[in-house]
Image (tube, rainbow, N blue to C red):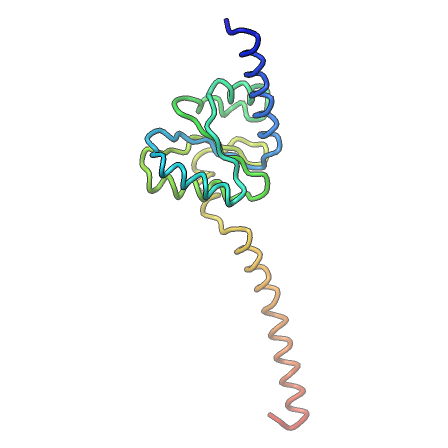
Length: 167
């Protein structure tokens, strides 16, 4: 049986992990086995730059953190090496970056994840990864709004030009 100090430290880790999970809007659980230090460093840097918190976690600690929560169904994926990526703002960043990394690193596997308090499968994470970034979506919406306005402005200008005899 672990001594009181070790037990207290593990309980603190579970509480911190539970708090991070509660704040996250999306999470992706991966098996990082076989990833080189250099590749892992690049991956961590890219995730950090995109506002994603990525860290290795013991299966037992994550299992205790998700027990009795809406994420309890993820416990079946907690085998082997486990790391988790959590995002508090961008829904697609973690899935996009980790899916791209998994394509070029055959040993790196996405196990499961969650989206807005619902456990999702690998297919859902792959679909999420294929969505454009928030900036691209906003630009698309802005262009959609601008197109009719621009056409209206050209039509008004054509009327003005015609009345002034410039047409």
